[in-house]
Image 1 (cartoon, one colour):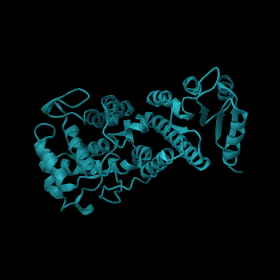
Image 2 (cartoon, rainbow, N blue to C red; image 1 turned 45 degrees about the vertical axis):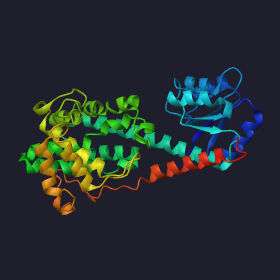
Image 3 (cartoon, rainbow, N blue to C red; image 1 turned 90 degrees about the horizontal axis):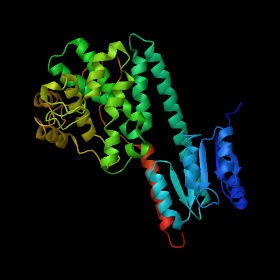
Image 4 (cartoon, one colour; image 1 turned 180 degrees about the vertical axis):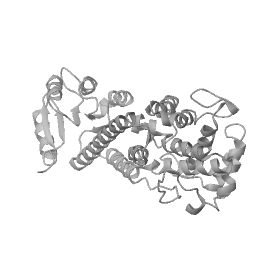
Length: 380
């Protein structure tokens, strides 16, 4: 038996447009249509709609108003706005408020529309899978006195699925952290707790919008504020598990800086737990030597220079030295064999952190093509 088709709702006050959209999308999706905002909201109450496509200019309710009202009925549904050039300020306001996934400018191209819808449905399905996985994992963790290897790995995989540019980041951070922990003489139990904290340090980013995680530029102050909440969220996700008490503390404070300028509690110096200081160094090293949406890797040598430059202000100097003693200031000693074995038995397929970011790059290429089509002569 085949899987049921994804349900899409199309709202437009022009019957001809509804017929055309149904014809373009009907082969791949179950398409519901509505001739206005109130009719569309009634459909949302009856059907599990994954994607809403609405015209902006309609009598009674505008497209933006419909999408805002839909948040109370189907908050998880992906939202696409069809608009003319004169509606540009309305759609900017809607996008900034977080209600619109994409806008499509009229006159739209059928192939471009189908590609946008496909990406939107993929995003919806990915979010649903992540949400279900987190709920399942949280329920399982609440019943456990010990933490299984599979659960730890599944949590890391859930975050990797959110944005493939960070794929493998948590596992690499955990290994760099183990490298430092062994150098400074941590006990086996401390190293176990450290590895868990390294794997789970960013799990709270599951709740951060993709528009922020995938932004191809530096975050603005408001976006940075949203991002800075993730250590607290990460800690909250594991706070009820007794065996993770120590790991939770290190996760919570892994963005505290020695000079007190970090977050969330602006701790200073030795008031920052040792495990948190270790994860900060490991996290920064992997971030700088990995490709990210907003910049390419700066390389091992420059990353080492940055760690040394900010030692004593941001990073613990002893911990930076411990890492570089093992990996080399140019990364010349960095091999899979030179990294400590996992205490949890997790496999690290490769220490090379450079990621292709195929999902991100494909979406960037799609946006660039859409912009090119919109700016072409006669596209208005």
